[in-house]
Length: 188
Image (cartoon, rainbow, N blue to C red; front, side, top):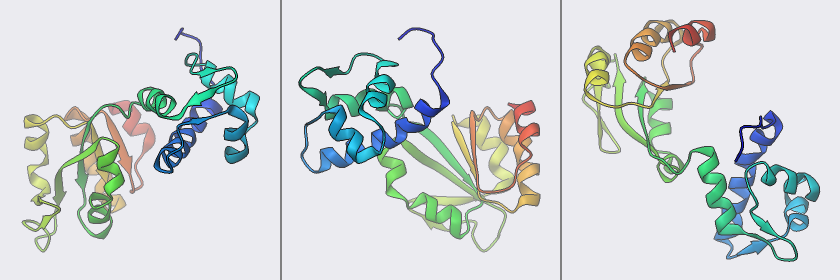
């Protein structure tokens, strides 16, 4: 792939293609034409071919696309062929629900630690992980590689934790809290 810029619209469509191709594989479908794919995705066949040509030549005229090969190529493009270590900050109902969502693990997102400041939650086990006190966060970040911090804390606590996470080497933040985006960009 050359260094040309890919349009944001193409990038937004890639996860949809990926999910739909996964559905096809689950149904035992091994190949699909751009026309068949366009009918299912509400995108023109021409647009689909243009989208995929941004990343390489995945199809064959008269044959279409090998569904497994195409999904694997999109998986690589999206970075889903790698494993990512996640921590959850705020282990209440939302934090625990995210941890139990099996699709994260299937896509390479591995939860490695949970943190909270509630004495009622600290020490509890959720899906094999023990909830640690938030005061242990800084040390944990020094001792472990963390790719993504998932913020599930009240808004007023999120700002306080943002700097700790940013200085701890975390590469990305998924936030279910209101975080000052400008401050996050300055820290990252």
